[in-house]
Length: 302
Image 1 (cartoon, rainbow, N blue to C red):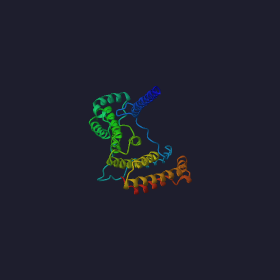
Image 2 (image 1 turned 180 degrees about the vertical axis):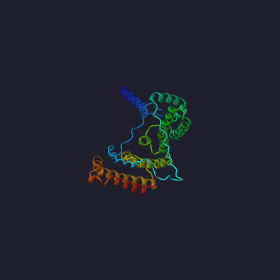
Image 3 (image 1 turned 60 degrees about the vertical axis):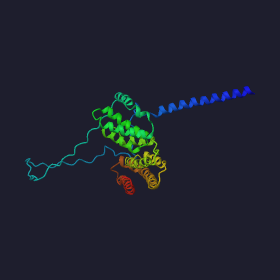
Image 4 (image 1 turned 45 degrees about the horizontal axis):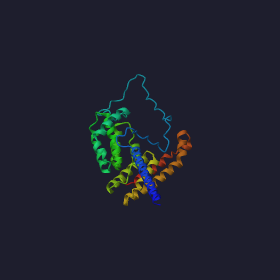
């Protein structure tokens, strides 16, 4: 009996030890799958397609006929006194292309060493502090395109891991202002992956406000799917008072807008393929614009 008890205890201990080994392996794998700041495999997310199809580029307005020319070629129009040629606004500066993966890898390796101490602290407050620091460093790296790109991507990731959606959007906006990436898709992707309910009520409240603004941009881009997912996630943070009511009303309005879009989709397709058909003339897009205008009039977030 004693031998049996000893064997049973040894079997139980070995099973428990094996469970701890398996748990350790899973934790290591989960850490690897989660990625980290300055991850070499980062790629800009693909922008979402709008809910309504774009207009047919082949359909264009008839060209305006040229002005008649007098037989003798003279122009008797009196000159305008005191008038100036209106100035043409300067075109915005062209954005830089995304740096090559090989060059990004070099910069990431360097910054992993430079910010090794900050990267070791994975707490949310430290991640937010790191994001702010990386944004500051990026402002001084205008002459080093690859370094600046990697710093801004790192700031976006650090803000996401720090559960600060507003800071994440700020970094993504700076990234898209200089490089050929889509800020809205980056922000939506980060919002879907981050923990919106932070460790303090103030940060959580800030995430709700930033999320409401982001949902407005997603609706304007007709990305109703991600807008709905984001609002559902914001509701999951258990907001209180006016914020909770605003999130709920946005969800109802979005559901109505999606229903209206699906209902008039066949008419939009007919208008796109047969613009000269009189039956397709009453543009249903006006219904969508009216719904958006009414929704914005009831919104409390700018």
